[in-house]
View (cartoon, rainbow, N blue to C red):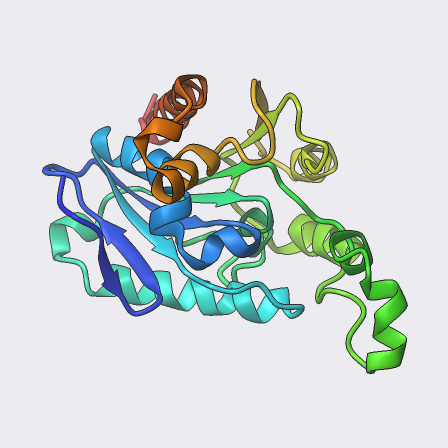
Length: 246
């Protein structure tokens, strides 16, 4: 496995031999440095033969604009890939807000083979930023994300076209909103979306790599690492089953 390298707003990692490509978008402030905060999960996937493209960004209020920006970065990376690798199946992988940004991609998902959405989060701005409802009128700032939570689900039902989606919900995750998304996805003709519940919490995909980077190996939690390895295996197995012809 090679070292992480930066390509514009993407952080990339290559296995010795690739069987597919993951386009990853993280959530909240963790997404600014995905090669650090999600390192354990992404490297576990790379060890299983998947190439990684992780988008680095700082969340804002215009989620549609950021979804388009991420999509353009991933598309450019695919265009720069050698011919053989460009034919590999693409998995869009998101965590929290990153799931929403993938679902809002302007191609409706057509540039990918499948989506895995971990801890899908679609809260309103004042729920995500508790002080916003009080401060916004005085500061004269936008008070809702664009699109809003309701509009996001409407857009998914009308424009998102990928039938193969795995929603992953962690047992102790109070921020997860996967069930409403699953209901919208399954109402589409020909949909094959499913929900997988695993042990853990909202930070399970990120916490072990972030903790070790900040505090060193002495602070690593073996239980968290086992959770991440199970998560990586679940994603890898589902993805290859989803893209393998019957």
